[in-house]
Image 1 (cartoon, one colour):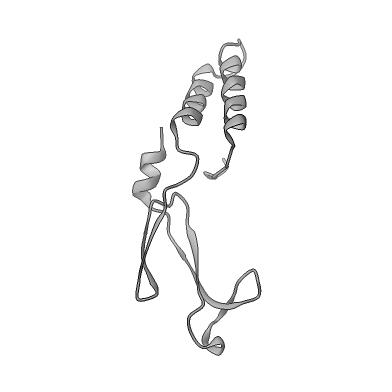
Image 2: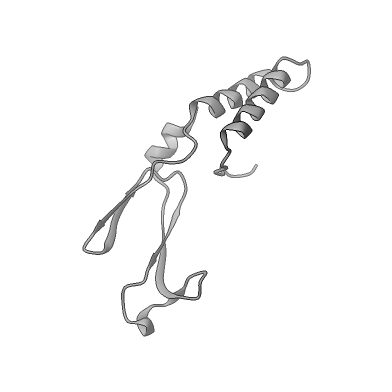
Length: 109
């Protein structure tokens, strides 16, 4: 089974998916309850996560509301001391902050 993913839909795409799922749920094929639950998710969930990053003294101190791990790139320091390279070729210190489990629990329907 695939892991949870974050997919962005504009309002027209969300409406098209909702309509297709309602037609599917009303047919004799497939799992009507699963289709209704997915349609409900499209209608009731926010289209993007509400992520807050707390920074103090130029350093990330905490992150809340992220339903997936976040990559942090810190560019502060002597270039020779920065062990990583970002996607633009810039030296940095890079680490991942884990997903916020409280956020993930609130997203499940």
